[in-house]
Amino acid sequence: MSDVTPDAAIGRIERLLAEAELLTDPRARSIVHALTAALVELANAGLSRAVALGGPELERQLADDPLAGSLLVLAGTHPDGADVRARAALEAASGQLHACGVELSRVDRIDRDGDAGIRVVLVGERGTPVDPAKARAVVEQIVTSRAPDADIVEVELAGQMVFAAGFVPADRLRVRL
Image 1: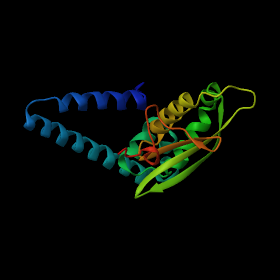
Image 2: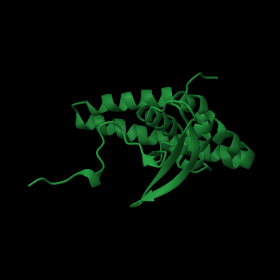
Image 3: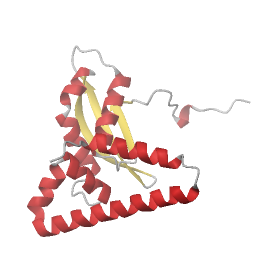
Image 4: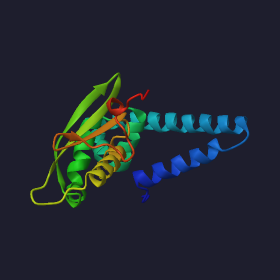
């Protein structure tokens, strides 16, 4: 059995694809993209076959496994929505959240102009200093590791949205004349 973690495998794939984009030969880049698509199709077909042969119990086991579950997400066949997966991952990482001075209140599914996403609502722990920027970064890392198919990740703390460093909400932008 391999010791590959989903994050390590995805990181390696992203690095290799970034390197492929730097190839100067457009035909070589096209071949890399076609090969990648073919491998994803093969993995999807294999997972679909395994689930069909193994039934709902095997599907649940695969879905709950971090590596196999990430392949089901890639295939678009994971039985749980992104919000359910994000909630489970955040609940499992409560220690990381506590280190930021927050705890999970709830996870909501949101829809913005056809983009599906997740709103994570956090509450500060009583008597503990809160680092909103660190909390947002931790939440984003956890959510994207288990729910990379979420187009949007919003983080709310004490009724206020917590934005990424350097982010300026559109309603704060003004044209100066």
